[in-house]
Image (tube, rainbow, N blue to C red; front, side, top):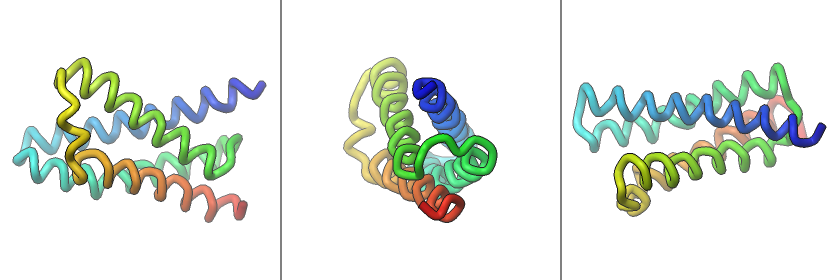
Length: 121
């Protein structure tokens, strides 16, 4: 059941992505876009650290590197196809380091390092 373990990882990635969307929507509701982006950049790795901790504690079916790649792949895909193409109708968000590239990098690192610390692999 190789597919099943990847589907479970994708679902956990989507849970993390929903948390990131919540940070952005909530942040924009109470402050400026710039501040919301900073909150998101700081909060995204924390959210994914928590999601990763739960994933590795309860499921642990993919390696830390596989999980980090799946999680960041889910985030990039959702940002590209849903946020950029369907909501914003623009790829402008990908020009922003604080809006996309820093959170992508920190999500990857957070997931990978959480997995490594919990699995020693």
